[in-house]
Length: 85
Image (tube, rainbow, N blue to C red):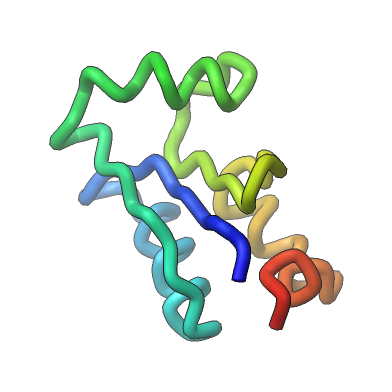
């Protein structure tokens, strides 16, 4: 199973949707809450090529982007392949 990391906040509806999608697929992920750990925001921005919005989702070294991109991968059937499902 690949390493999935998400940078999120508690109140972001797109973060909630991303968690829900990955939970439905039974995928374990690391949820880095930048609202609880604001010192990690610069790390997220650097990894995400300057993007500041949440969520920012990574599968291994692949930067998915946000929930919209995650959902597109799922619709296209690419998400399961990247997750090894």
